[in-house]
Structure formats: structure tokens, C-alpha cells
Amino acid sequence: MADASKAPPTPTRSPRALWRIGRGRSGGSLGCAVIARHAIGLGHKVLVADGDINNPMLSRLYPPEGAHGVGRPKNATLETCKVWLADTLAKALEQHASVVIDMGGGDRISEELAAESDLGHFLAASNLIPTYAYFTGPERDDFEHMHRIWASGAFQGGTSVLFLNAGLQRNASRAVDPFAWLREDPRLLAMLKAGVIPIDMPALTSMKYIEEEGLSVFDAIDNKAGRSGRHLNPLWVHMAQKWLKDFTHNLDEEGAAEWMP
Image (cartoon, rainbow, N blue to C red; front, top):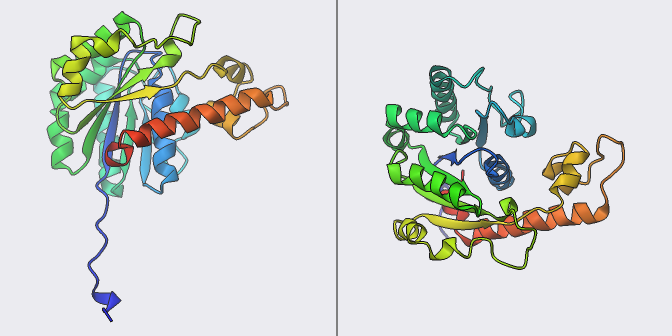
């Protein structure tokens, strides 16, 4: 019988730095929140760094005083964000933790930070493997904005993931794939050929009813009472739960275990 005390140690999982990329209101903060929740649920050590000055969604879900939160930058200037990023990455490295970084829709700041700091090489050298999470809606200008950033080469190394957020569809009809035009676009095909992983992000059509009660999607999933003191309509709760189930399924189907925090 083998001596269990001499068994080789179980290899530890390398931490990841997931960096959200995309214009404001592209669903990036919500996508980051789901990824963080999924990773934490799997027992991974994760910090959630909310650098989005205009939308503090992540810091409300993961406050700085909590086990997974970090402080937010005081303003959106390049110098402030640079110091905040340096402190955040140092904390992740010190704790051997993965980190989800949401700079919001401030792509100029993100690009300048990435270029000035040689971010990808720094992360790789620090054994904090980068995952770049791009978000786009089905409108052509959304994709063109995101594609310009990808094509610029500002974010190098690691894994690139493209979230196709159907929730940003302007057409009320849900019977047609809003990304049908994009799936045949040579620019997207070139991204896929380069190794970018596409993931469908379903539309959460009950979101406006959830927000009217001052709740997050996770509050709805957990069936918490809203600001009125009442619980949501059971149908809205069911729709939120199904949305998370479908989105998580899409993550797992595209190998999220390999690239997420």
C-alpha cells in the first residue's frame, strides 16, 4: 500500500487577472460580477477591484471591507488609476489571489495603463495570468469600438474572451439572433482565428423590474425583498435564475475553468 504521506502535492491553480474591456453600458460590470461569483462559488481566492467611477455595481456587491473587495480609486485620472492598479495588483500577488478588474467604460485609461505599464508581460512575469474580457452589444458601433481596442494590440498575452451581450439588442424581437450579421463578419472571424473565445451573454429581460425595486440581479436570484418591502414577482425571480443558469452554462461550455479567476 502506497504511503499517502509521500504522495506528490496537488498542484495549485495559478491565479488570474481578468480585465474588463468595452465601452460603458456594455454589460461589462454585470459580466464581471457573474464571473467573480462563479469563481468564488468554486472556492477560488478572488479579489474584485471596482475601478468604474460612474457605476459602482461591483463595489456594492463586493464592498472594500468584505473578504473579496478592494478600495476604489478616488477619481478617474490616469495617475490615480495607475497607483490604484499598482496597489491592487500588489495585494493580489501578496495574497496569491486572482483579481477581477473593472475600469468601466474608460477605455482610454485602460489602454494607456496597459501600454505604459507593459501590462501583459508584467502579469505573466508575476505569475498572474491575464484574461482580457471584451464586451459588445449587437450594434455595429459597439463592435467597432471593441474591435479597435483588440486590434491595437494594447492587451497582449494570456487569454482573450469576447462576450456577445444580447441584452443590448435595440430591436424588441427576441426571435432573431441579434448577432447573426456579426458571426459572418471577417473581423470577428479573424479574432476567432487568433484564439479569442466567443461567449453568448443572454438577455435578462426582467432587469428593469429588478432595478425598479433597487435590487441587483443576485438579490433577485436569492429572492430578497426590494425597497418597497415586498418580494419580486415570482416570474421575475424565475427569469433571473434561468438567466444565471444559462449564462453560467455558456461559460462552462467554453472552458471557463481554464481562463477565469
